[in-house]
Image (cartoon, rainbow, N blue to C red; front, side, top):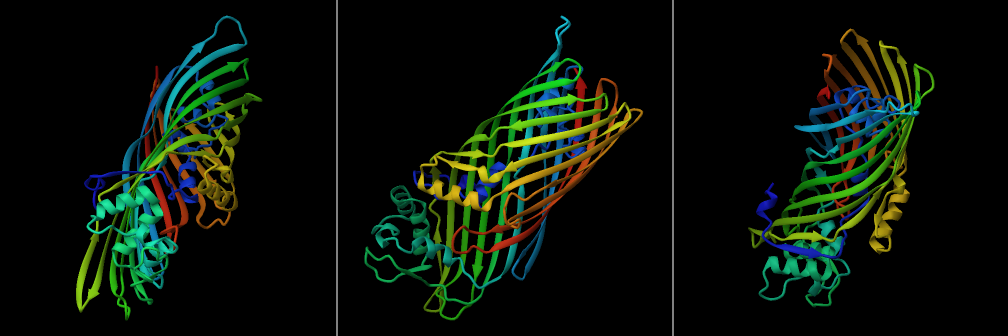
Length: 504
């Protein structure tokens, strides 16, 4: 695939937004704290425990459990293995990446005045909440062509609104059409200028089109590559009241970076087909920022038994998107193959839009066996049907929000984890289960994961190592119109996490 920066020689601002959809809403709304090695070893079941920097981003009251000031940094390696199937084709791929998953510190101030407010804690914690690094490919024989994508976008549009003026360059035409009429007209222009589409008449007011790709079977290869991550920085205030009550507040700053490149190659030998080969590349770059807050509490009912409750507000995100496209076709003219390349070298810059992701509530239980170990359980609920594109007055966003309400649902997450201490060593393990956010349970399936970990306490310094793995199936729809067939993906993600923590 071509590098994005090689294409960025022109910039086009577009006010018509037609790219955002339900799958984008889920991509930017899901994800859980990846966190420290100890946190991951217990599969994130930390809501009633606290005493870990990643636990603070689940339940803000967790900072008040610290007895001394503390800092930590976590490094991780993530490997994703994908098994894909697309009609009769089967493929496998894997990739890995190394990153900083967590870093931060908490500062504990003791109150010796005799007040029931025993301590005040202040913390800052960075967490990687979702890793977008992924790549896979699929291939198979389909009876539907990519021409259906261009036909769906073109039908009903005037020919003079999807074609170049006499003597106008491809770049100028692509730019002017996008600026004047929007993204849909650009897609129709690509189909027409590449000879995939044939107008019923060559009049400017023509609005009907046929395809120069004859029906039959089509060999298709589709590749996907993505990078980026979601992250947040939590600014925390915690306090201990009396001997058994811990309270906390987080103010969170969120950020989003996501880049995706896809390429479809299609070939056919169908009788009567003028266009026999198509290569279609789409690149997208997304950046965003947002805000949320969290409230949390932990109650020590007995010396051993603890209960936690936390609320995550919705996240209010501002998102910007940029796209580039490339299309090439090979057609038969008088027995010779003729290559047509459409490389506008234009960066489409869309207007900023808003996304409100759903809030979440988490209830937690934990039992501590003195200094020997513990067992912990967390339950969370998040209603993805409450996700909203804004402004809701926009007719396109209003339609997408209606689709979200119908196709997404409330999802529950269950986490259980345990730890056993043997002198300075700690042995850990956990399991988690997450419901699909889709009502059909198939577009993205349920997630199952397990974790094992080991820790060693040197005194004022601790070193923790964890391996965890999760599995989730999903059906990736190639395009949102026309060629709407899906590649079935069985994704297994494995993580090795190392945390160095020390008392300040």
